Amino acid sequence: MGDLTKLGIAAARDGLNAGDFSARELTAAHITAMVAAKPLNAFITETPDQAVEAATASDARRAKGEAGKLEGIPLAIKDLFCTKDVLTTAASHILDGFKPRYESTVTANLWKEGAVMLGKVNLDELAMGSSNETSYYGNVVNPWRRAGDNRDLVPGGSSGGSASAVASFSAMGATGTDTGGSIRQPASFTGIVGCKPTYGRCSRWGVVAFASSLDQPGPMARSVRDTAIMLEAMAGFDPKDSTSVDMPVPNFEAALTGDIRGLKVGIPKEYRTDGMSPEIEALWQQGIDWMKAAGAEIVEISLPHTKYALAAYYIIAPAEASSNLARYDGVRYGLRVEGKDLNDMYANTRAEGFGAEVKRRLLIGTYALSAGYYDAYYLKAQKVRTRIANDFKEAYEKVDVILTPTAPSAAFSFGDKSDDPLAMYLNDVFTVPASLAGLPGISVPAGLSEEGLPLGLQLLGRPFDEETVFRAAGVLEEAAGFTATPTDWWRG
Ligand code: GLN
Image 1 (tube, helix red, strand yellow):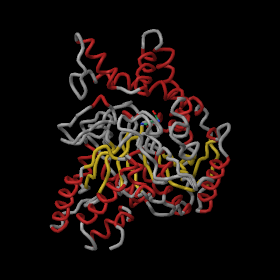
Image 2: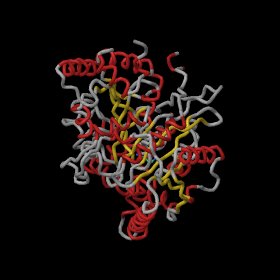
Image 3: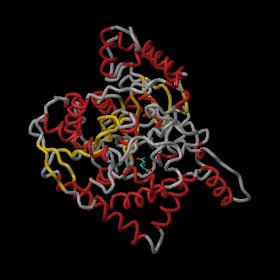
Image 4: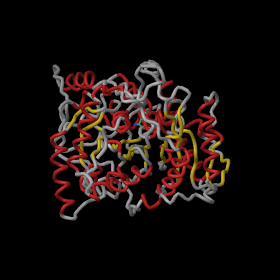
């Protein structure tokens, strides 16, 4: 039967359909891998008993001819998605002991299609971060290490637990959420595929809120096809989320035709940032050459307001966070630290419940929204956001997709940037503009750095045109032929 954890979702689906193995066997193999990967600290909560039960039910459904699109596929769920009766932490002390009474729409959609939950995976606290160093539950470790170097590296963030679980073959796929790059950047750091759909494609209902106008759930897996299969199951209109868009969900897998002849691929000149590392520049050029060789037409485009995107994002996201996080008051959820009166209790709870990065965002956000500063910061940032969205709109009159690097570097070491928030925020330079514009994007593993670490390329598309993004990504993936995997040193 071989090692079932090495299969992708599409291959596992075929094997299950052919009766080569059962969902129970597939799940058991992943539970073993998940337990062996403890040193990576990808999981906050493991749910093996529930997984075996779900796999047994899945085998029964298949036997009756009622298999869903993800029937029997074991997945990891970012611990930002509410899961009924299962601890949901958002990697924050503030949600101590919180077991939701309800299931998020996205996870409910996955279970409806037969997927099996292995457990809840770690992230930066409340999804704020790019390295998974802000989790209350400890750092997540990247399965990859530099060649000849045993030091641990960050998996990226905030969906670092999702990325580490998938890259270490502990789960076949994982849910992530992307507010400013949290699916794409960790995918790039761990050599997997991560897709951020168009804002409104997947419901945010039951997902712990960070910045509501930017947050978007999406799939992470080891191939473009696998993310396409997952997204189809996750997506769909949800009346419970007022920003969910009522549009049919296409068969994303069918979009992978392998044919991009005549496709217009935009290369934004503003993404050639000062001091761009030569290996990132070379990888980008390689990507351009691959697309050209596959018959695409390369078009230089301009997105003139790109240089303001990070600044605008780091006003808007904290502003929305400061409003969203007001709900953590020691009364409704999780942690409560008593005080001499009600206000004192609020203050004690929030002082103890939030970590340093979350507090920094709350301070910035509250400041940017306060009377007297609102116009100077928040309103200005919103105007910049509109300009950025307009830049993309104009570009998409000339091109079908846009190709850029995903991140300015490969995975870095713990502590490299955690003392310097601005250096950390710079990691999001290529992912944030599309987030502000609400556009779909994907990161595809495209090569290895000089130090032997994965590097991703990003493709961005028109609103709700994930199909073209997947089609182009499939071609890029094929051309890159990225088959490297980390050594499984964590097994000891
Ligand atoms: N790194 C970005 C931030 O810290 C993005 C996080 C995210 O997308 N959730 O805000």
